[in-house]
Amino acid sequence: MYEYYLRVTMADSKAISDELLEEIKRVIDESNKNASSARIKKTITYLGRISEYAIRVKLEAKRELVPSRALSSISRGLLQLEEPMLSEVKSHVERHCVISVTADENRRLTDREVMQELLEIYFGRSEMSTTNKELALETADEVRRAVEKYLSRKQTERV
Image (tube, rainbow, N blue to C red; front, side, top):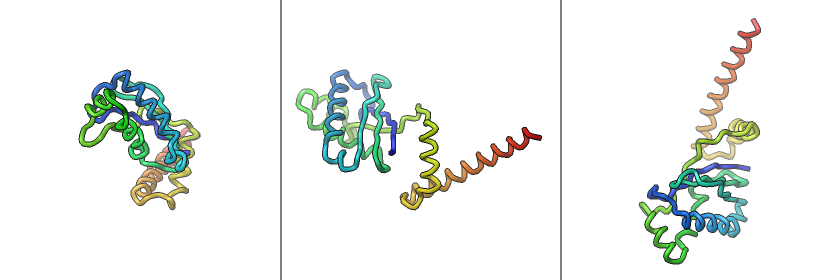
């Protein structure tokens, strides 16, 4: 299972009103019920407000996804709202985008998640895109250097 913790803002980075937030939560619930989400086994969970400008969501999926594309159902749902909420949504549109999605870096991975990613880095490369394979190889080298440093320090302490 892949988990992505994401920070979502409106495309124009302006404040999300309480009313719009309620609509976003409703759209998330509807998105989880649609056929596409069921087919790719994707679930979006609203986790809370980070600030008046941003919310935190968790995206879970059986396979690796591009988070910003996986959340496009939220944008589509917001653009289907009735007036006057639709006008509010449209006021946030910037460069044809409704929302902006970034990885939430303020989260610490669990030990289980770290092990899951390490297994993917070392043994799951055959199913990765070329870009992700390169990233996995770089990361594997960094992990190898960190383990070598750890073993070196561990040996030094024993002497």
